[in-house]
Length: 188
Image 1: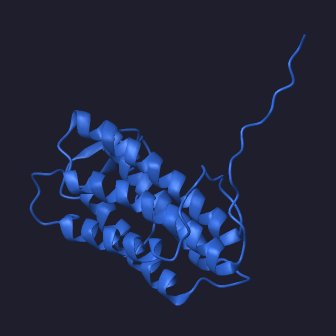
Image 2: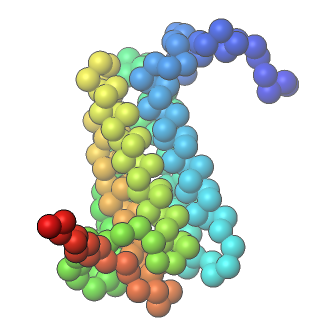
């Protein structure tokens, strides 16, 4: 089987479950943003140096599988019955992991800048890409019917990435980077 079909050469693509849309349609942008997020999670998992702890690695692998399902969910119109949709159980699983990891963390007393360890920096990047994907899905939901659990999942997932970034720093003994307002010199 060839990887190219030539069906998209004029700017249209097929939706799972039927129908063709422009490649710049909001639905395509939404599942494309989820695909990009999945690739960033792959980068987090592939980093060299101090590897991620096994529990984090397992959770991120599960996230990748769920993101693949979420992409299929978003690529399929809601009236198509033969696709697995993200459900409340995936959202609850994220909440349970957030709660478990949060127990390891000191109280948050300031805004944090993305950074610290390389793993934490990559996880912060995943968080921001997740927020962008969430914004795309919100825009799509204003025009078309979208699985409401998809939005809940992305909202919770960005929280998980934030917590995992903190965990990566704490477990690695790397100080978190707190934001401090810059003092401005007055021009008199």
